[in-house]
Each structure stands twice: as C-alpha cells, then as structure tokens.
Figure 1 (cartoon, helix red, strand yellow):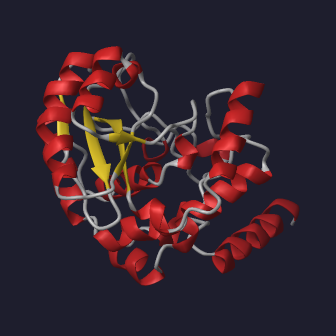
Figure 2 (cartoon, rainbow, N blue to C red):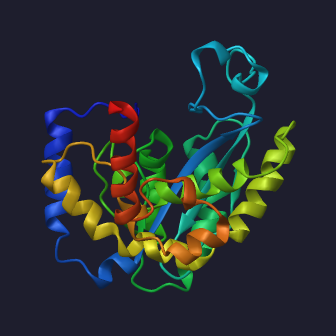
Length: 264
C-alpha cells in the first residue's frame, strides 16, 4: 500500500488546472530545472521490503529485518536536474531553514548553475524553507523565474523517480552502510553513475504523467515516468528487471502471473 498526502478538493482542482495549463508545453518542459530534497537512511529504508515465504518461516533470520526503534540515522541531500545537465549533490547537515537554503543551496549552487542556462524556469516544492518571504525576495533579486507548483504534487515531478533510481543503486551494494559518512559517499557515487539519458527519459514522459493526473481529475496518480525508460539502459544498471512497470508488456505479464498465483 502506497502512502500519499491527502488531497482536499482545492488541492485536486489546482492540480487539474495546473496540468491543463501546460498541455501545450513541448520545448518549455526542457527549460525547467526540477529540485528536491530526500533522506537516505543507514542500513535500512523507511519503506517496506516484501519477500515470498511460507507462514512458518516468518522468524527465520533470512526473513527478518533488524532495525533500531526511533528515527534512523541518515543523510538529507538536495539535487536539481535539467534536461541536459544536473547539479551536484548537496549535503544538508541538520535541519534546513530559509537562511541555510539561501546560502548553502540557492546562492552556492542554483545561481551559478542557472547562469549558463537561458530561459530556465526553476521548480521547487512548497516546503516551508522554499516559500519563506526572504527566499522569494532572493530569487526575485537574482532574476530566477519560478514554476508555480501545486501543493502536495510530488507525482508531477520527474525527480521523484530519479530518487528511486538512486535508492535502487544503493540497495545493490553488497554490504549495508554502517555510518552516515558511508551513506554520503555512496550517494555521491550513485549520483555520478546516473546517466543523463535516464533523466531525459523522465522529462520526455512528463506530458503523460500530466494527462494521467488530469484523467484522475487532479487526484493521486501512479508514477508513470518509468514506463518509457530505455530497457537497455535499465538492463545496464540491472534495475528494472525486478520492476513490474518497466514496460507495458512486462507489466501485462506480471498482472497475468499474479492472477494465476492468486487464483490457482
């Protein structure tokens, strides 16, 4: 079961209108630079891991995931992606507030990053540090155009699926990280391995995602960005062999196979 933020009627309407206003966008989408923060934990993720097992095997060591209670230690990072270029991974120590967002990210990374990209539109979500008055003032002073962003809409950003790619690369490591510094080094290595062609595949699928959200009348939508990933690129990373949505044909196969298992 996936977890999403609840969408009130005003959220759904704003998402629907936002998608409708950009139906004619073609080249404009390639001028957008998407940004986001994410947290990666030591030894385990915040999600669930599903395995096939018999009921009697639930206490076997191979079917148990050990973890400490409370918040797991980890590393928060910030990234930005454009159609032909990506920003460097930025490490965030502690909590991110408006001042740190301005000096550690916007002034140090975003402004130099966007200087060589004319007609660029910068995207950020509506997190409190992003929408603070002094942050808006700084962006206006620097002449940075902002893409209006509907609240609670991570499914409209291609960067969400890029996070999945990075997490999958980390999960392929033969041994779990035991320290936060190890997580950081592995994150940098994974980010540097990610080819620009994968990012471009996500950008090229934005219009499909927007149409899916419009069809859902602004409601939550499954991430469709990965449906058009190049299978050869996917095989190169040995990722999407295990992902049922890597292609429509494989998706149909998994649905049929699940039906057979459940009913026979």
